[in-house]
Image (tube, rainbow, N blue to C red):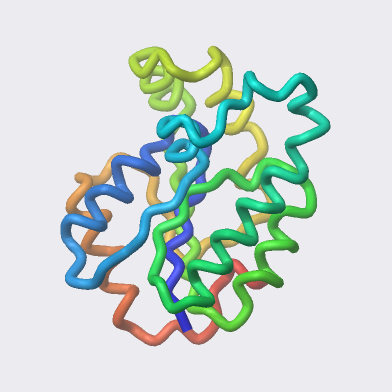
Length: 173
């Protein structure tokens, strides 16, 4: 059984920053997986697809199954992802069954998201606002972080959950 720390939140909510801080503070090795890593490495170039809308479902199906394969091989993971498409949550619930999932929701204010998005300059304008409107709808988290707490406090909260027994993650509800 692998540990999956699932960081979920809108674009620019701080998932990558939090993942890096968790890895630095953790005594256990954690693979950090995200679509951004594929894009930033050049392994995936969305603009190379003449019909990205048509290719998107297959791409993400493959990504989800790759994450499962890493977990099934016994790797503990930090997954940053946005459940922005109907069916993804149910798909990942089936794929991650049998692993310990800690589902962490990042919920900064809209003004914080918009400020971060503008400062980054590498996201389409309005992405954070679009995500903000719907990504948390109907989801229940094992831990919710609003981004106002100091980063190290959030890291401690998450890492304390990795050693405590978790009856059943809310991810599976």
